[in-house]
Image 1 (cartoon, helix red, strand yellow):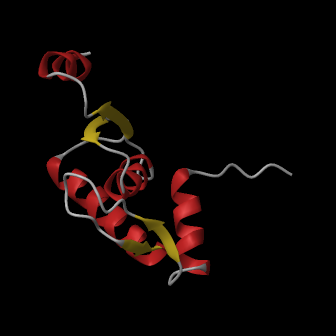
Image 2 (image 1 turned 120 degrees about the horizontal axis):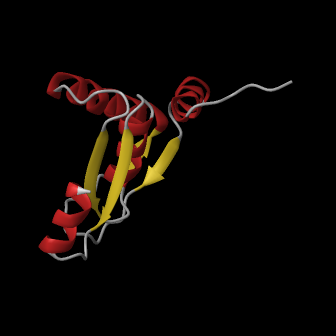
Amino acid sequence: MYYPLTVRDFLDRADSVYPDRVGIVDEPNQPAASLGELTYRQIAVDARAQAAALDALGVPVGGRVAIISQNSARLFTSFFGVSGWGRVLVPVNFRLSAPEVQYIVRH
């Protein structure tokens, strides 16, 4: 039997089955302040808040959301907050120059 699963299904399942387990450990040595250990519950709360903020900004389902970030807990949470609510996450390498980022965002 085939059950199509979405990104949000995985997050909802982890939040309901393992809410207090650590879901990700953020890198301590990065430019932004480390978020430390995040439980699946906190990842779900943060992802829902990000999705609500994108709703408030008027970003439509199918809309692209570019994020410049290192591999971090923020990027991981954004994967769920953006993709889990039907938008398209466009991760942009933080090492790119401003003209390169500008090209990606415009195209």
